[in-house]
Image (cartoon, rainbow, N blue to C red; front, side):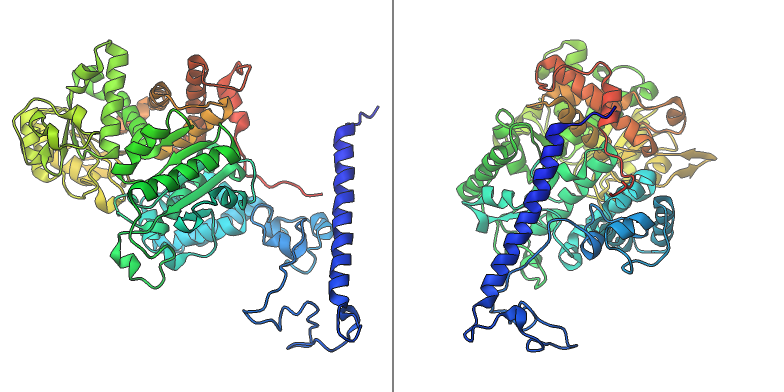
Length: 620
């Protein structure tokens, strides 16, 4: 016995009627407008009077029009035939079956061969491996994403360790610097000062109406490369690709946005190919008003539960924006909070090699910006949670060095507000090596964005102070890393535990192979975002970051420890992301911040069931 869903059948019938009616009316409108000729003759009846090169009839006057004349850009609402092959959301290339080729008017538009998605994946990977230049691989992957979305994500998921350095750090550094030259088609929204007063209208131009995650940048501090202005769009695009590939968040609910307020990079301002506003950066009230309008428009258009991830804002704006909107919007700063969570995970995992608890160790940072202070604060919070000591007391285990030297109490009046909690009692120290000797840290963390600052003398000093010094050179891209894996292992004579922001190859030293860990934000933010989305969380809480850190640390195995790794391999990242999502969601339910009720009984299985899979669908 058949069961009919009447509402669905009615909607389908109504939809078919409306499509037919729109086409009929469009035909009438076109007919009426085209009949108004001075001699009463219809354009539709004119034969061989509108021919253009090749003898093609130019019915609408498009080919004869100049740039100053207006024409109507007619389109079709249902993708089929030629338009279907150029829609990255639905295009399957040679994987369209014989039945689909007949049903969707694809006969003759494709070669006769029919390929499986697996064969397509094998072919693309073969082609990618022929490229010798990483930027060429990046461009090939971006072309694939614009041509065949599901194949792009299938490739990235199945070959994550090989392709993550291509679509993310370190290759993205070069790609962003040359983004204007390699720009092909927009992959997100560009909101500039020109759109002030109509940002809500601009948001409505985006074709997808249900958005769950926005990654937004103003391009002022891209990786360790500085102000790239509008060319920072590569960051939101890349981050959201990882939300989908690693965290299973559907690509259709992701929106990359660049806020273009100008750039102070004179090289870009002088570049004729620069794609952004050619003016100095707006600051002060003008900047604040644009961001306020943007945040209000996002909430108005997409609701209370859209996650807004701030990405690569300069320090002076990043902390202020996070503090301003954390109580009114669902906001997350990956540079401050995401980096902190992934580094804390490595520290928790490293305790099995170092011994003791976090409270037993002393931490020294080179770099006191968004990443450095964000990590330091989360370490202090974790110590507080585990020991019940006051936060101010926990902070005393953590020391920071900035461009002027060790941050101490005598400098407090001249410090930026986010550095002041780290100004401890100590005599001034200018150089990093002197700070290492004075503080005697067990853990050295680099977030300076300046390469080669962990010199041989610094690493040797760490090794002389500790049987197993933990050295984390976190700055990206690779060229900006404080030291390489080889330097850390060689200079410490194989005693160091090393992790970095960008990937390094395994290192052979005295007959032993060391595999360094990568403190990559991609471990945390995709699963963190998935946990927020699937639980309907309305605000980000610090305890959710701590839950993500502990979840990631628990994924490190004994085999990883034997290799010197304090992070798990990326090959298991979807499983790791599901576990992180479950722990983040559990904490959200515990804190009363989750709105998707009732709470699922098995959050890990629920997270896995929510994940996007890029296998091809069959079209009817």
